[in-house]
Length: 285
Ligand code: 13P
Image (cartoon, rainbow, N blue to C red; front, side, top):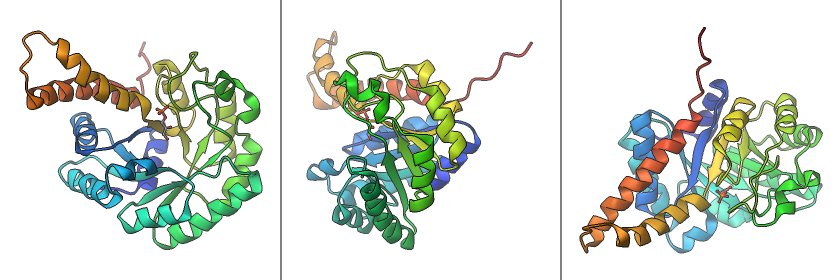
């Protein structure tokens, strides 16, 4: 199976009434350990690159690592450019090997969001590349108003109109999540999610996956979320493990010993989180 189109991965997740975890990655280890964890559980994964990370790792190198890793496993592995509002950067990423991109026009007025999204879809689809867009506003989790204010949420009517006009392959929606660390536990609007999922067949994406409780995520996967984006908690774990290692009893003062410790902690985290996408079996009587 190995390297796969994100649209194919998401259609399969939709058929299984679950989501695929999509992580913002930034180096070899963050890609490789996610692919390894997915393979251990036979669960597909999506590797994402945030455009500003291209200052740290060139998109072509990132794409090459992902494709090489994908060749070593049986699970489907997708590659996606996260949040991008630049036509040039998106086309550059496609040139560099990305097979799925996000055009984020959510800060724009509705008709302008439709226009820029159509522009990307036209170019990307001609090249066989998948496109994710965003409708509604997924703000910053440090601002309560950004995820509690229902005026910012996506409406089913607009989602239907947007998808019909743009023909996107997946749609990121606002239903009560936000990016970064939440100042208060979020409460996703399941009724809104149900309405949107009823109105469109397009796979739905939830951003701001850091810190949303497991029960809410599982419920959202059942109700139509097919891709969950996670970044902040993954970055934080890489950082905290480098510090925590200093407290490990009998630690070896060696970079490679530290990396071994880091890999164990991060793989355990990933193995646990990936399991959230396995639909729970109803208890049999
Ligand atoms: P978090 O950083 O809150 O996990 O969100 C990531 C995200 O949505 C990337 O698109």
